[in-house]
Image (cartoon, rainbow, N blue to C red; front, side, top):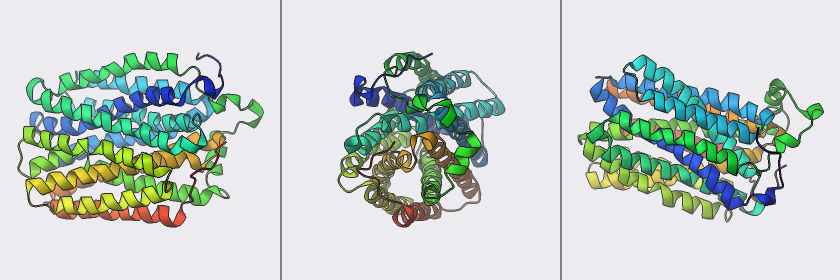
Length: 406
């Protein structure tokens, strides 16, 4: 077992951010790598666009299950323990995936990888939220999310240089390093404050009680807002970014050039996070979310309508800038909606509902491409979904900047 809790001050905010951030980075490597691997698998296994869509959706299904199950377990067993378990699940599943030759077995493993990934993300954000001073909490959560861009960047670089030359199996094996990192996390997180551990047995709620709690009183509107926000942002993200390398191929670029252009677009994610991290304590969570969601929507619509390579890369980079900044703000905003005893459940359930959007988004692109629907209209659909998410935050969300969470 992990050592007993010590005061928050004994684990610096920066150290916690770094330790949790690298776990986030490895998660992003997996999602980013999958988008490139799907393009390679399509050629090697002669898969249809619909089959590719199902592979992406199975990962999202796993993430929905993982967010639900591990979010609830985090409220019972503690954030740190569940964080380590989820990291090991997805790293081991990834390593095994490198050796399979069957589409069915690969899909089954993608479910378990997704479950680990889906559970890790909301648990990590809750842990950091509970260990950082209120005046810098939002900034630190967005900075935590910025490690996602680092993971995508590494995935893009590995995919660009490794997959065309050595194959997708070698690239997948590289993600096994996360299992080793899990041991380091166990050591460094032992001094992190875990408020769940301080809750007495008499006051602990059952999972059903926690589920009921997020739909009662003041939390009902917050839950509706979060579920809408998560559904729309995940729907658009998986529909856009999981398919981005394949969309570039559809646009007429070969696989090497497609990977290269996506790498350029990925670079824009980092300044998007940093801008959101700076603004979130200046103008608040709502202002950042609404602005960045609308910015993503406009960029997506113009990306889908771009007619030249320069415009594709420009609007794609701007789309990455705004979308990942919005993601950072979402992870900062979500844990602040609930008290500690239902925080893991509430955040996990919102993330799980969002993963349903990921399932739909990934499948939708496959079916629409098969039906010969234009890229322009596909991206207009995702732009519209982002506008809906922005409106949900604008009209249903409450500003949490500067407010203490228990």
